Image (tube, rainbow, N blue to C red; front, side, top):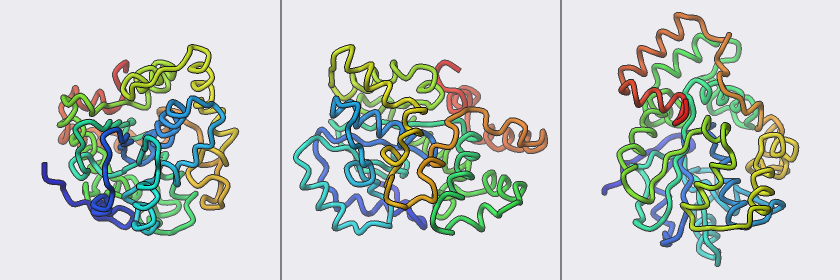
Length: 289
């Protein structure tokens, strides 16, 4: 299948051309702020079997698409890894290289929760790339841009509603393949132990019951926030203004009390034009919602 081109201020999926894909590679593929770091941590814990493993996600499980790091260095580091590898992407599935035996783990979240989490995230970034898209103190403009934004280019990295839906549709189009799996943030919160079991099965990994319990405890929100310098991407290196704020709340329904009925109706109108009722329900609430 031909790969679609996705180019934005942060994203350049042409960088994947320099990665020599291996049959057992694991790809964590999500829109931003939908549980990426959480799922990467679950994968890292399962692969190591060590609840105290130093995840160091930005180096050991790199975000291949991002322009910030020199791709020659990223590719060389990945090629030198003697163990099973995992990589992160915020590019939709139709823009990624496809490996028939690798595992693609796609994670989604209620678009409104992702949007409000991204607002917080933007304020914690050391760069002003999206400040005009998220004008300080002008929530109406910020929300309108979320609803009106395109699925590609600048708006992909600014995470418009259309870009989230594009991610979802691209993953759904491939979910009949045995190595493409969809997860939902709400389901992960409801049953973290069940999420570990499902991911372990996908990766062909087994641990004792005691080890699994310790791994699950390590991946709880409270533990990750309490040890933010260890679990945040580039944690402890001064990249974020606050590593702790990277794990702001981990809650659902962030929009309640923050959006007017008019804004909620506008959101409903846009998403209903993009998804069927059953698709919308899953994207918002997950399997058990």
